[in-house]
Figure 1 (cartoon, rainbow, N blue to C red):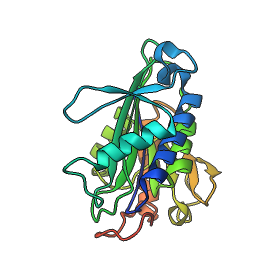
Figure 2: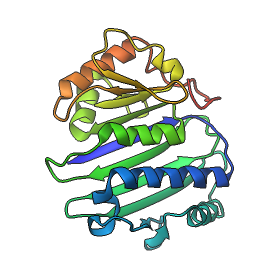
Figure 3: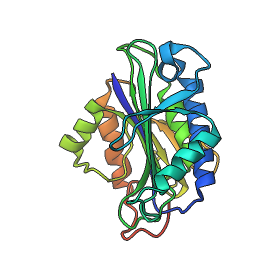
Figure 4: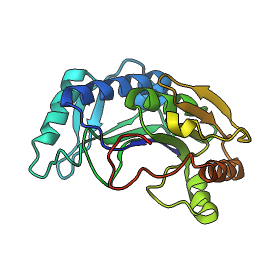
Length: 240
C-alpha cells in the first residue's frame, strides 16, 4: 500500500546549515519509526540513502549532517538554483521486501506562490502496521509547517472527486496537522483524536485505513470552519 506523508509551509529563509540539521532530524526520526523501510534488508543501523539527481545517476549519501550539508550546498551551486525557490533534496531507500521510502523536500526559500514542502512516499506490504500519526508528527516537529497530512491514493481521489479539493489547497487526510492559528479554528464537532504538539499546533487522528468517507467528512468540516484557508498570495509568511 502506498502512503504519502506531507508537510507544507510558506516562505521561510534559512541558512543551509539549518536545513541540514532539519534533514538530519527527519532521517533520524523516520529511521527510528520505520526500520523495515529505511534500512537495506530491514536491518537496523544502516545509514546510507540514495540521492536522486535530476539528470545524473543516483549516488549514495550518508545520513550524517556533514554529508547532508554538502549535498544541499551542491544543490545551491547548480546553475538554475534560486534562493526564492528554495533548496531541494530527494532521497530514496529500499528496505525489507515490499518496503520502500522516498523523501523529497524544498525548503529555505522565499517563494511568493509555490509552497515549500517535505514529502515522504512510503510503500509497505498490504496489512503491514505503519505508525502513520508518528510519521506526520516527525515532520511537524522538525519542519514547523503550516499544515500537513497523511493520505493514501483512495483518500486523495475521494477528496478531489467528492469534496472539490484541488492540488495546492491545504488539506488533511486520514491524519492531519494544523499550525496554531489553524488549530484554533478546529470545530468541536470534529470526530478526531487530537494531540497538541510543541509550539501549539495540533495532530488530528481522523480515520483508519479504508475509512475514506470519514476523511472526506473531516476535510469538509475543517474547510467550512476556515481551518483550511490557503495562505494569501503573494505569500508573505510561513504559516497562517
